[in-house]
Image (cartoon, rainbow, N blue to C red; front, side, top):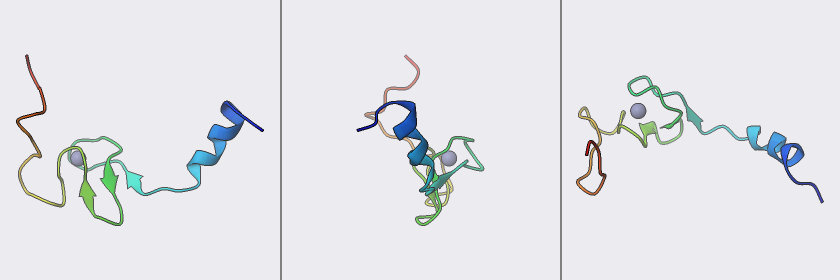
Length: 56
Ligand SMILES: [Zn+2]
């Protein structure tokens, strides 16, 4: 049984997300070709929802 940093080292084996060209976050999905953060690849406009509280 291992825990902590030893187990975390195995998390780098799968890589489905890379840095998004538009928002810069690691949320661009390679297989889906979409960014889950800004919607890059899915729509030309920025992804935004009313339920997402931004800017109080
Ligand atoms: Zn993005």
